[in-house]
Image (cartoon, one colour):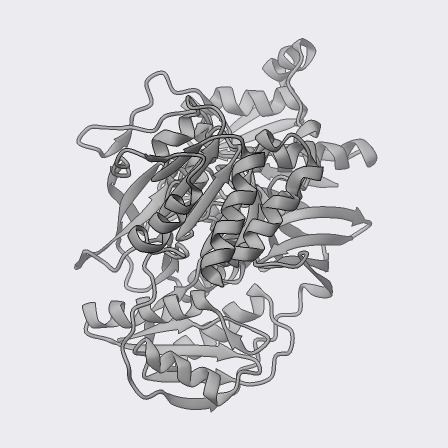
Length: 249
Length: 318
């Protein structure tokens, strides 16, 4: 089986976000970039499938410039077999999905895994758009996946519950925590890091998928006014404030 | 030019996020000199559809049949209705259905798409919109360069704006024959209110010391009519299910009231909840960073404060 895991490179979750160049770009000095957490759950799931099904190949794919190579190498160090980087700045989620679809049409995979969304632009668009572009089913967010031959059983998250689904491969799956657990995530060991240096990272040029949107500029949320502290022995006062001042209960 | 909005319902009852989406579509149509058209799919009564008149939606297409829906079918039906009505803007709630159907519809229509949108366009040529980004740590102003666009909303950001009109309902049929996903079963989360839609949320963290202590959290939530949530460590340890995990890598929520009990307020947690309208923090540690992001705080032991708070709220609710 051939599995493609699409990864995004995002600021570490502990990053304090600020902007530069008249608020037109993320201030990235000193920011540590990581594999998007939702994608990492997907990558780990792909490795579980590989270990249970000898002969499976796991490719990671990233759409972005060479500044993302360390993040791609980390995915290889965790255990992916090879990598593809589509050499273009990712600007629009449909452009990203278009580039991935273009690559997959020429290089078919049985299972394509993305994250349910990236934690930077929070689009939650690529998984389903990719499914539509390829004319195959998509399940995202997905918290359960098992493959039996050419059939997949999936657990999708829907508002208010979970849905059990089946579909024939190929499919697109959007991962999040639950697809594997936090404790299943892997930290690259020295052997993995050494091996990653020599695993193939193929750079392919973009197909020129059109960008339909761009970010004009960014803002940060307005700071909150000071917190009103209420005495622990006077919860009635808190209730009064919530009722009369905040008017939320 | 018309603005098409997908109206979600649960077992025939129109969802609050659908009223918000309809409200947004009406405002968007006003801003762009177009008309707003709603689409309901499945078994929804006429009297229920008429409720959309309270937010200014004048016309609704009611697509009958379709006992089982998924995002792929919704996208196929929306594309059919959009083509027949020359619609150029397509509005969805930021629900699982909206986030699933929106991208598929964008591809079908050759449209652009932007999600997590919080406001109507500030400018219409080109369309410029504000979306949440960096998991609530920032906002991005997005310029759309397509003639057709899908807009997926951020729940509880635009709000429901009342405007009374008469609703004209047109019953139509549309096949939406996408069968590539086979539905097997649906498990509803345990009792209580669905977290992404909740207006009030009671959330607790490691300060609760163990899963066995959640009784008072559930009681407070029940008294308020709130959903329950938890911090990441709590769901990682397994004290609560993943579906309750709010934060950067869990669910991002923006309820009217978020009560955080025994949660210190790590930056990843704040990212997922900071757009809540009012935040109350109850923590024994006066240095907990969450107090800096809160509107109201109580420094005290949750095991003493929460039962008192529950009693005080019960008292006013009679």
